[in-house]
Amino acid sequence: MYSWTNEFLKELKKKRKFAIRLGKISSSGMGYYIPVSKTKDLLLGKSKLENLTTNDLSLMISQKGVDMRIGLDIASMAYKKQVQQIVLISGDSDFVPAAKLARREGVDFVLDPLGSIIKDDLMEYIDGLRTIDNAFKLKN
Image (cartoon, rainbow, N blue to C red; front, side, top):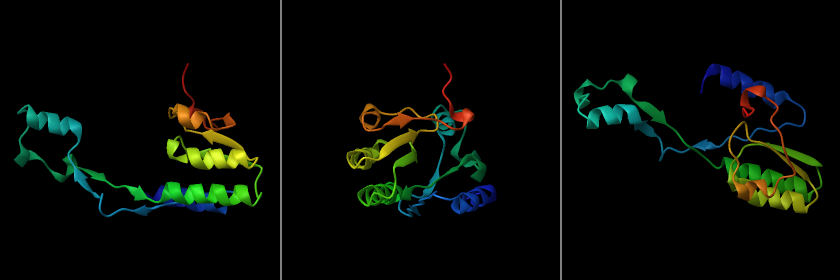
């Protein structure tokens, strides 16, 4: 993780009424891959495998458990009536059950998808949609 990212996360953790949930990096899904453009060049004979360098590879890392941790936090806070509103910064439809539960418990559930397209199944279970950062607002 880049140092600016670590510093950014440290600052976010200091914020009042703010929580960050990070998953664990899955070693089973970790590895290097050849990007599509390089693969096409190889298949079309424009490049040769022996000419590839480490700069031609990309690292693939996946996190596990983030959605579950966030979902449990949402459920816990909703059941305990600890919050009136939750703003989830994501567009992942894996959060449908958590959003549905929170709303059923009377929590105002707002989504900031950071410019991502939201699937209809998630859109059905949110109370509002907002994007705070102009860099992520969709252009009309």
